[in-house]
Image (tube, rainbow over all chains, first blue to last red; front, top):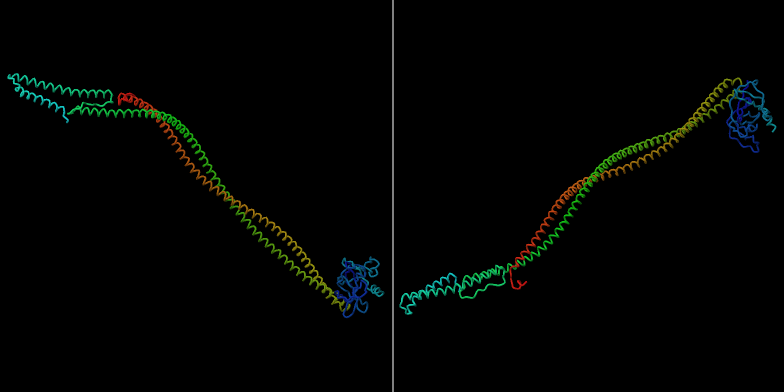
Length: 138
Length: 426
């Protein structure tokens, strides 16, 4: 049984395996990064480590003007980034067999492998490794 | 020297007796012897003396008497022009007295007749004047009688008019009494109106006070509602804090779960605790949400209450204005009613005065009526008296005419007397 964190980007729900999450925290004071793309919100100090904060909604092109109240911090040293999300819901257990095929467009399809129905809530299961890979290419 | 007739007779006798005696004594001187001759001579001489003396005396006497008789006859025939003159004598006697008396009579008669004549003439003239005057007076009296009759008729019509006036004034007095009664009723009605209007005004004022009290209460309620809203907002803030705490707790629980998962098998119990904490946070958030919803509802209700309070206040304002208007209207009614009261009172007073005046008038008219009827009676009496007077006047005229006639006849009769030659020539 795997556990996933269900969070929200705008009005859409996403799921992320907690094995790749270091911590969830409130949106901290961000430091401005010059010449950064629009989806890079800034840098945060996480227990002494400087981490870039990604506006995931903006990056995925879901909603550009959504509010960001929480950041999901990846473990430092590996991916070394934090994802800004609208809100976090809860951590649930899930069975990959219950997953449904994805029906999203091309841009998001890279990161969304499948969907998960949690008590009637359609959760897009987010593949963080794809995002990391893509970020490394930039 | 005055010698009375008796004395003259006595003297005559004495002379005759003395002559007898004298002759008796003288005759013997003649020388006649014869006695008887003596006697004859003495008797004859005495007789002769007596005859001479008697004749002389009687002639003198009778002539005086004749003169007196003639004078008396003249006087009796009315000739008073001449006075009586007896021949002068040494020894006037009673005939002279008589002559003097007759002359006195003549003079007196003359003056009397003259006086009578002139008086009767004057009387005749006066009687004529009197007659004329009496006739004029009769005419005047007739006129007066006519006038008095007219006055009598006028007095009668005046009496009728006064009676009519009296009736009219009594009617007027009656009407005035009716006016007084009506004015009294008006006064009562106006009094009632005033008291009712005052009660109405009082009620309006009390209603106004009640409205103001209600308004005050509503305003207080509004303030309370507003302050309640403020309290609710405070509660909302507290709920927000609770919510934030719940979110943080949730976050904490999520992180705890992540840590537990990282701990693997050892973190399983911790995961359960984290789950429980998360559930607590959830239920807290849920309760906080419910509270927020409730607060929203209460706030909405409070707003609607406030709105309805505002509407009530506006309506109360309207009501207040209406009551103000009512109060003003009552005040105006009271003013008008008081005015009417005053007027009605003055009408009553005036009517009462008028009534008194009318009563006085009735009394006065009665007196006038009495006086007028007295007048009419007096005028009728006057008319009768005037007629009597007229008759008397006529009688008097007749009497005056009679008097004239009498005076004229008196003059005629007095004309018989001739006072002087010049008068007799007239």
